[in-house]
Length: 189
Image 1 (cartoon, rainbow, N blue to C red):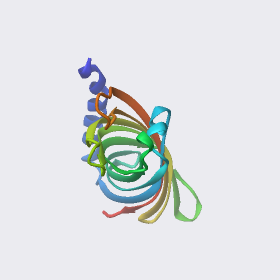
Image 2: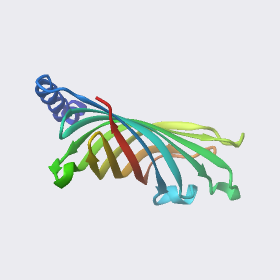
Image 3: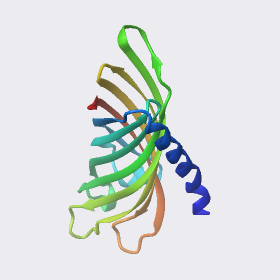
Image 4: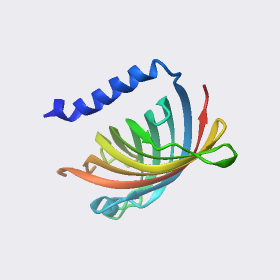
């Protein structure tokens, strides 16, 4: 079953890589800040919080990117009547498909969708809570406005991840959250 899931992505990657040999790839650095919004049962555990991170992207073609991301959320818990802090660290790899539209005065509009996966770690400051991590996946939707080698980006991401509460005897469950990110993309070369 896993082979069937990854086969279309592998074929897309191979086709894009072969086509990219004719074109020069562009490296991008994308710092961002935003808002982390837990959903459903996850909202019962965590408050909304700021989000900070950095993406790196390799533009294989003008409409296809490979993306890596590191992000950090300084969250506040709502567990067992504590307001203790927790740090949420995420690492993800994914792909992004852009629709490139040239506008007047050298501006380029690039709405995009993306998917990917990685690891989500919850690190708790309180000694009685055990830090845990697990697999995570995301789907993204956003846009980029580029002029020259600099762009302004707005991105929304929905995450699904494996979560185990730091409280002993807790279940291993799938939880969800949203992130809204505003950032800048620097196209280096």
